[in-house]
Amino acid sequence: MFRNLFKNFSKDLGIDLGTANTLVYVKDQGIVINEPSVVAINNRNEKIIAIGEDAKIMLGKTPMHITVIRPLVDGVISDFEVSEKMIKHFIGKIHRESFTFMPRPRVLIAIPLDVTEVERKAVEDAVIGAGAAEVLLVEEALAGAIGAGLPIQEASGSMIVDIGGGTTEIAVISLGGVVSWKSLKLAGDKLNDAIIQYARDKFNIILGERTAERIKVQIASVTPLEESLEATMRGRDLLTGLPKEIKITDANIREAIIKPIKLIVDNIKTTIENTPPELVADLYERGMVLSGGGALLRGLDDLITQETKIPVYITDDPLTTVVRGTGKILDDIDNLKEILLPSTKDIGLG
Image (cartoon, rainbow, N blue to C red; front, side):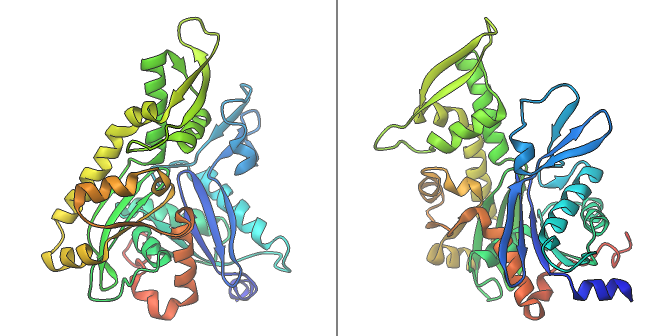
């Protein structure tokens, strides 16, 4: 009884629990949290000392007794305890200014297409442990398509490619379900890794993760640009161990990331090849949508169009597409409840 009472005073939440960032939508308020999925822990007493943006600024700069970790890897929970505390922190932050002294919200979580039943249960348990009264699950691709305004319930093909931090979700959708799909553990983080490896191999510079990400955002492109872009690459010289700084261009970064980008494009083509012909005809007419941080890579839409012969559109505010989709589902839950995944309790894992 008390649980239901607390639920009535809590706010429905939609969460995009991403490898790189966690975004939270509050019903009737919009997106209220957009912070890195990063947690800093004091190893001496196992206490969490920072979460989100405060923890991310510590990456690569901590003393021995502090560890900065990402509790999600490739879109799934890798550290259950820390994930639960991170989610609890965000839920508490939302309710802090309300009269709810013990928030018990209903929470809708977007998860990757290829998660196992065990991984799904881990998400549910972590969110319940963080204080939710009820957990609803939706496939990330469907939430993204709804956030992008695609007519997913119609008898026609819609296609979305969501390139996040840990995973790339490629899906063709019709009649409220996913018809053909690929879920790749290849996305923004792997592009950062490719830049770090390239700097090491080509320039004998050891880069930090944040530096690689900054350079990617500043100058990365997947097709040649009319005007070349430049950035400063600073790191540690592999040979001398001393600081080293060089100038690099978009052509350098393109060379660094082109292999993983081609892998993503090849999987997009494979997904289209596995799609029924009638739906492919719809895609040629209506195109596909790019979302997630990877959608902002310069020239990616043009490259995919060249390779697939299908028009490609970048959705508005691609970084928030999935969480906006969870918000739309919460706002119209009666009409969209059929697209939700069954609880693991309903399939015998509870």
